[in-house]
Length: 320
Image (cartoon, rainbow, N blue to C red; front, side, top):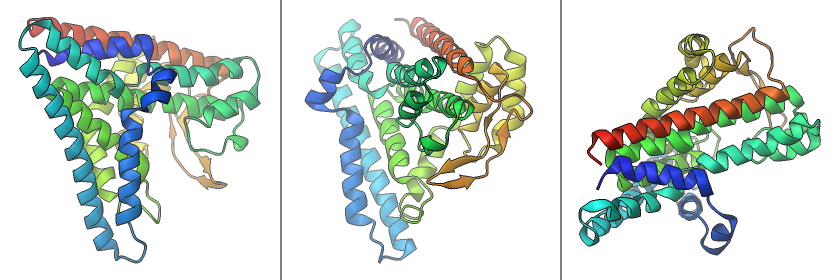
């Protein structure tokens, strides 16, 4: 089985189809399955009366259990495919189909486009509703530049989390790798936040996610820079400003995107009526306008084509 060919097939299917609503209504999605398990563990194990040390220890066990289960399922499926369809393209194609739900190339594009279209038409209310689906900020507080900024940041960060990182771990480890990564990312999104409830219980999930995204985030930033019309500016901004971001990883693709488009990103933002001070990425550049969000989507599409070309090259080099 060629892991590279399988991941290329998964990317192609996802780019073409996404995850159809009809399929979601019928069977859900692997992320929602994992989410129910994580929510159940959070409810049962993360008790307010326990000490922080106990909650952290239980959080470590919960994270390792979820990741181990996902990797184990991936390994079992991969072994079954290899046993049933040894050699040839059959097993690789089936592995690609199994990896397809664990990518989010089409859905990310569609969610951001749902913000860009009303924003370009001057429908700020519609854009606020659409952007509330992809970010946690209070949409009522967002004007046109803030909406464009929030959607652009989400696009940049989730290119790494939703596409490059799962592909990376799928290329390295096959189905166990991509399944384990998706579990890691879901854990972080659900319990990895630095809130009173999850400061201790979600500690392991957040740290594991940081490690899993260390290389993919930097590769995503490089991908944005090299496929942009301003590669030198994008690289310079990424190398200068990425470390200023509150996240050890999200700053790399976001700073590269900011430099590539000649806009500023990040900065102060409002969550639940509370302003969180954040440094600017590409400070001194103008705020993004509605047209810049469309430019960000165009850069995203170019980056995905370049990513697909890289995976194709790996497929050819591996002899498939």
